[in-house]
Length: 73
Image (cartoon, helix red, strand yellow):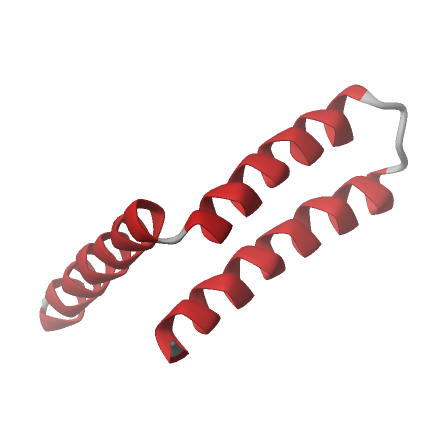
């Protein structure tokens, strides 16, 4: 049961960090909007599943890199 308590706390802390980054970092908000547009286009355009997965995965990696950058700053 302790595992789920710690997992819940980590999820709450991570979400709070994302919310704080959204409020305070313009570049993170820009990348989120860019990912929303590219994700929508990835599903609307006739792409192979591998191409679609690559677009979505790289978009998530950019957001992760931005969060790491914000944490370092």
